[in-house]
Structures are given as C-alpha cells and as structure tokens.
Image (cartoon, rainbow, N blue to C red):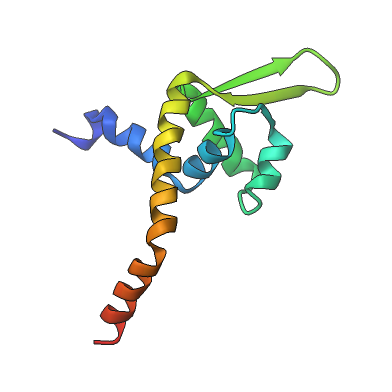
Length: 114
C-alpha cells in the first residue's frame, strides 16, 4: 500500500507527533483548556505549532473546539470520546516509559560502553 493512500499512517503521525502527544496528554484530565493555558502547559510549543496541532487533532475528531460568543473571544478545547480513547493509550504508554526508565538507561549505558 502506498503511503499517500494510507490513512492509518497519517492518523498515527498526527497522534504521535511531538505536540500531538503532549496536547492529548494535557487534555486527558477531562477539563476544558483555553489556548493560552495549553500554551503555558506546552511551554516550548510555538503559537503557530500549537494552533496547527490543535486544528489537525480537531479535524481528525480527537479534539472539540468550542467558541463562546463573547468579547474578547473565548475558546476552549476538550477531548472527544475518540480523543479520550487515544489519550488513554498515550497516557498508559507514558506510565510504562516512566516505570522502565532505569532499564532503558542501563541498556543505553551497556550499548554506549561495551
């Protein structure tokens, strides 16, 4: 199957991108987040990159963006049920990684210092 017609690969890239993973993890607490709050949480993400990431995740059905008709504009982001499912897997992977850091570190040291 060609990459261009492989929707699974594109979705995987969106979910597992650097900012996609972090945005989904931040939103996984179930609360609504304003853009500025997410930007502070993901302190190294540029405004442009975070905007692109949230738009992509919204397009894929993982994130819900709600605009409130007030001045100044008020926008909140939450996970959709689909997004919650993806985030649960990412959070589980993050916990597994955290639990296995010592073993990975030892493997790296063995590799680096044969």
